Image 1: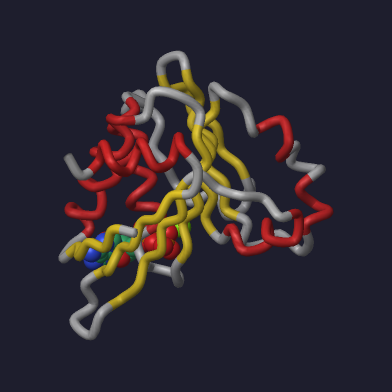
Image 2: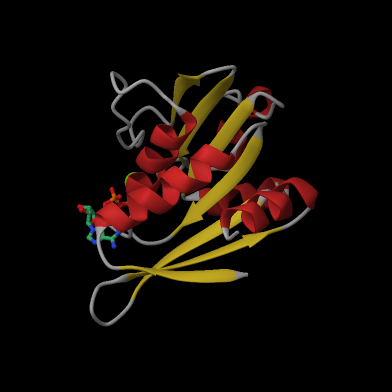
Length: 154
Ligand code: ADP
Ligand code: MG
């Protein structure tokens, strides 16, 4: 696990951008942390790093559950499961079809996916410290995720 400190939203964005620029295949990333912790800011950075056109402004998909953005040959799928009542509702949003080798699936409020034992390639946790910096912990399970985060800290 790697832990970093971000002192402002620009730093969180930049970290996302660096990660996004290293992604070259489908991957699933969980973003955990309280409201305002910086999850959506991080996704905006990932979108930039992936080369998502600036005409798409990445907003929190809280009301739509999932937003998709073209990213070259890949697709960025940004989910926010905050309002999902149960794992059964995943079927309505076509979650299984989102998991694809060409999809970068990034999930805010991923906790409910535990119910279907879904495993992410990368888990990122955002916490506040006493000065309201963000402490960002990144861990991977499996080869694709491990390769990506090793690459990130070169
Ligand atoms: P979340 O998606 O986790 O609810 P957002 O990214 O939407 O969080 O919002 C984070 C808010 O906190 C933004 O208003 C941002 O400007 C502010 N902020 C302050 N410091 C940071 C930081 N270090 N990283 C990310 N956001 C920060
Ligand atoms: Mg958000």
